[in-house]
Length: 65
Image 1 (cartoon, rainbow, N blue to C red):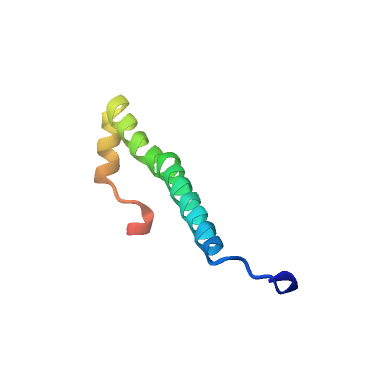
Image 2: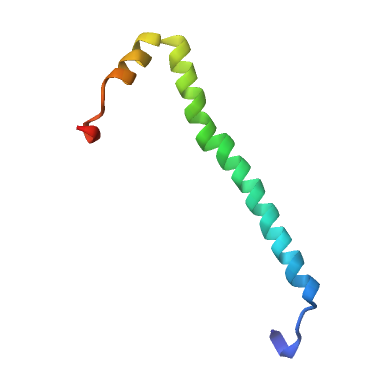
């Protein structure tokens, strides 16, 4: 460390707990915004235009052929 000063051992624990809290916070945002929107979009299409939803389940995309 700077000038030969070493922080106390508890400082490393505090930093690690802060990193873990940040990870848990960001992980929830990711799940709600990115993954959750796919599930809600699927439900929205299923409710508003069921014939399109049925076609999408029957036909495969070009990558699968």
